[in-house]
Image 1 (cartoon, rainbow, N blue to C red):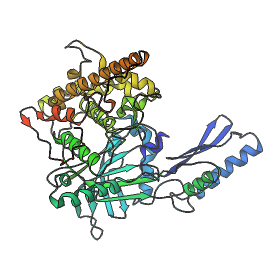
Image 2: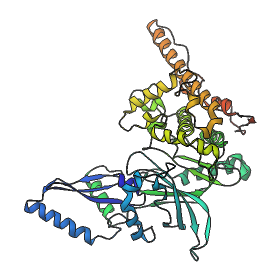
Image 3: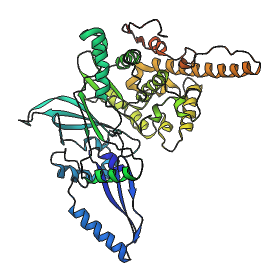
Length: 474
């Protein structure tokens, strides 16, 4: 399955599993894994299956074997990716994995024209076969391929066919903003203009299509497509998260859009200077566990339905994971860059919050790990203390992280006390005191974030007016 994760533009794989004289055939794609019963190649039936497999594979085209025809010169692409296992394991002297350049030079023939891939910005590390890739690319002039356009970011993912595309959701939000305030509405400066989005659907008669037809006829089967979303490139800015918070607030209050799956791979952002950014880095599936709210990880939760506060908790985890597990790459090495090399390599071997990404943990156990992180008290010089966890690239965000962590901890503690008081009141036959579970007693809501993020060093940030009605609680 790791093979499919390393090749986001392959539709499927057909493999054979051999153990001495036993042979099994395997098919897998982003939706399903099929394994045949084992046969003994010493027997006539096994020999027939083996010979049929050899002949069948020989007759297959590259598309039948899973190499998509949207790749120009896909024979070269196929040959290059035969060495995926070596590319996965090797890194350069700075610790940068070689898979970043695995697709370099490949040309995607999309419905919006050809794009030449420069490098891989991010490769997801979660459920194999369903991972999100983000690549940097440039659009080529169809008439003159030597002429390259501006740099763009392409997100390649494998959502289910029923999942609404980012282009549709962003379009809905833009329509509401334009109707409400015209072209000058502040949120339009941040909502990304998705340049192009397309699904690579199953081709009728193809291997993948025949498998899907068979499974749909005999059982429930969720078909996944490969989806490409293209947006303009933008540089990092310290103001990103403050603007994302404002946009999330507006989307929740106006077009009534609640994200429900905030992670590092599901944030789209546009800068004031008319450049869009499609940021992606995430792990696993819809409801990405390392970024999920504690309530949603629990089998039995006090707050099981998804509310906006859960999105805010996920946003906090995105910031926490980004600021502690990542560093900004610099174009030219500096003395401080070289001095930090040991720190960077050490974090690669034992990154902070590593247990959150352990795929063997149950969601309940992960919820407990997050609670431990929120409630533990460490000595000021402890390596587990929040300030010491933050990467040197994001040192200026330490106050944000520590303050939001305290707010979330205080909110959960306030809720625990409220639950305890409610139980006592019921035993005494009294009405329990009211408690706002949606905001953890007012400890964790939009205003909490605005109060924490309104100052960044010596810079003061101001939230834009939302023109909300009197029913707004923040």
